[in-house]
Image (cartoon, one colour):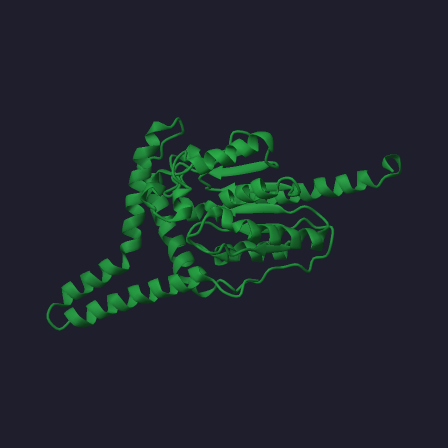
Length: 319
């Protein structure tokens, strides 16, 4: 398990700073104007829900250009409530303060298919705490990586993924499954471009990954943010490599209420099993019941297939 996380430190500063600012305003204005003091403190604390509402409004408008079903107002409101709850749990608790709470699990022995969990932009391995618990309970070896540096090139994450894949393959004697959220799916594709001549992976699952970029990335000046702009040269180079070196079997989960990756069809790949989940926002998509159940079923079926291939490969008629 990684020994440090720059994102955890950044989020700790941001969370505690926001709380200190709200309390400072409350203490300063309370003697003169209690109502203003409370209103100002709430405004500071509610910045995140306000930003999410704006993102969903923009995503809904931009998404009208696609042929996908458009979200109803009721779906957008439900998505806003769900994403607010997930953002608070993820960015105010799990990632800044609980990112080491769930260790990697390599003790299941050989024969089981392992899972590499790859987070996205401005995240760390704390995103996957619930997944780590579930996978461990099901007996699957699993590793959740930290992608560092947080604002570097996506190509810089290749070695981190490569190390995790190698550790799981050595522990299980099976090619692992990669489960990736958001930018993590692009990191997996960058890893494939760098290692496809020798890589062995059973399946890649992406959840809300901007495979063709996202409209929102136009506002990012970070290196990895620019690599997620719509239809940019870096993404075109990935696709060009995959034309001659096809990706392993891929499943892409995407939604028409994704407030980060939009238009929604940018989260799909031409040759993948693209699975549409209506009405679910970006972070919540990683914890949606349909997405989790479907992904766990994919992992189980991959394990059955790998075990069958192993038996076939060692039978007398194949010796």
